[in-house]
Image 1 (cartoon, one colour):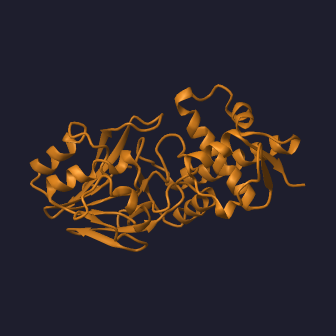
Image 2 (cartoon, rainbow, N blue to C red):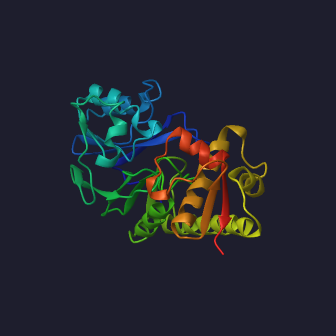
Image 3 (cartoon, rainbow, N blue to C red):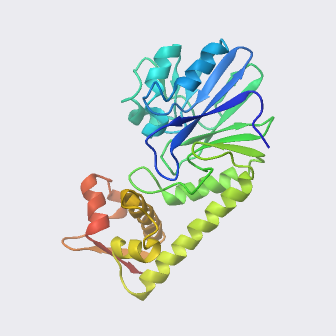
Length: 298
């Protein structure tokens, strides 16, 4: 299945995480108007195919819809908003992080569950899908059953979920929520179009469950640090540049397991900060990854 004629995908080069090499931007247009989902990085040359298409089609862009605040999605929003004289819409929970990219008079933190934006006869519905970030959004087009998934569901690989932005239990609930939409095709922010959205989502859920079982099987044998878990689970599968992503992913699982009362932790010096009081500063992240031992609850 292909995308409907009212949407065009532009794969913009961005400094993102492998295996992706760029970010998919979607131009939704009808009746001479356009909406753009995500804005890529602040590189006018990488955004040129999109901006050329808007100019050549004589479109009036009425807004930019951000799935979330990460720079490979939001950093180009200020440039595009000024070019097209339009607002940038985002969920309030991610708005503060977008302020560094978008002038105040352009930023609209007004997207929430059920918010609609329309161009011509095409209506997009915002879905609150937190977990990757607190204010992550997907966009649903109910007539053609197209789901724009941002980083919630990718076309290749799995998305990383971990502190400081991510929360695994919330993300798993998001995946279950997305399964209730009868999507026939999904437009992810990275990778190719997803031809079987429900199948991909079910795979994501099973993959997270398998990873959790791996972690618990190792911790059940004896207490472990994240470095030990990383070595045992990933071995040499990840390049050094992506090591921090794997660490944060494992950390996301360990936070979930502690929330569920299945894991406890001890630090090399002092007393661990209670989970509900943790603020994910760089220092606290280093404490969890370098100075913390995780044990299974009997």
